[in-house]
Picture 1 (cartoon, rainbow, N blue to C red):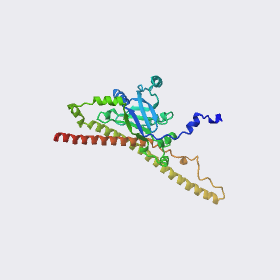
Picture 2 (cartoon, rainbow, N blue to C red):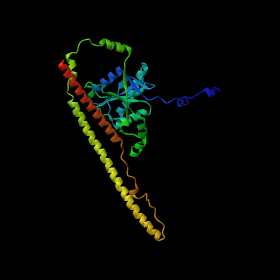
Picture 3 (cartoon, rainbow, N blue to C red):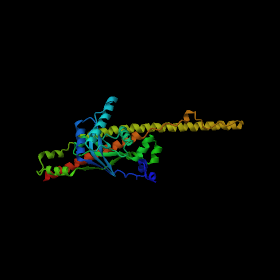
Picture 4 (tube, one colour):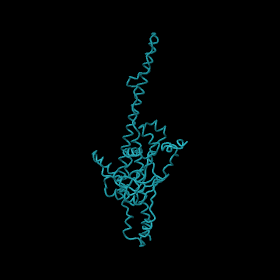
Length: 337
């Protein structure tokens, strides 16, 4: 009887309910400041770091972070980086600080983050962490007065498809997957302790607007608009090259189908003659014939990522244009007053 009451950890885990979907990422204000400081100090180089915290229901709490060493191609240096991460987490555990990995953060330049490398990093994290996020921070865009910080995760349907590395048109239609279904953006909520909130309240200035505060009304968004347009043109060129690959594939497929039809008609005429002569017919399909070998279909993953990147640049251009118009109206109101 006692043996029946004893349950293994595996049995308990198997009977657990399915975890609720991730709804929000709650980040401490200090963590955001550490991410901003790390990314700005190493501009224009791109940097990454580890996110630590707790997974509580539908909320992922990010309570701490630490930067990764600079990436190098040398394997020994990469091994040193892994040892550095383990040592950092051991030190945090000794001082009773959250040391559970919940993802990583990385900087980006003008929103250029939707790459195959990001997807591969997500898949590596998913092997050990079921729910992890990537915090993307753009210091260049943040310098225009917008906190360009977002939390991303891969969609479950895309991860299932990526594991089999099959991005053919038929498989994508079967899964009903489009380019907007690769990444999911999770709402970010900034949280501070009561002491920090009280301290920030004490720091609020009661003085009227000073002259330096008018700097945010400057309309010099032209360099950012130009860079976004340049990147958008490059992405359009890349998308055009991907479309040329598919056009080449469909041309080869049409040519192969025409050759197959011609070969079948010839074989059927030959079999008819053999039948009239009383001989056995030959098989209509010959696997050894090169024209019956399937033409490999190019993967659609690159075109999906490029389309995502184009959408991101268009949104940034719209945001910059909207900010410029808002500043114009605000300056006009100030001038009238």
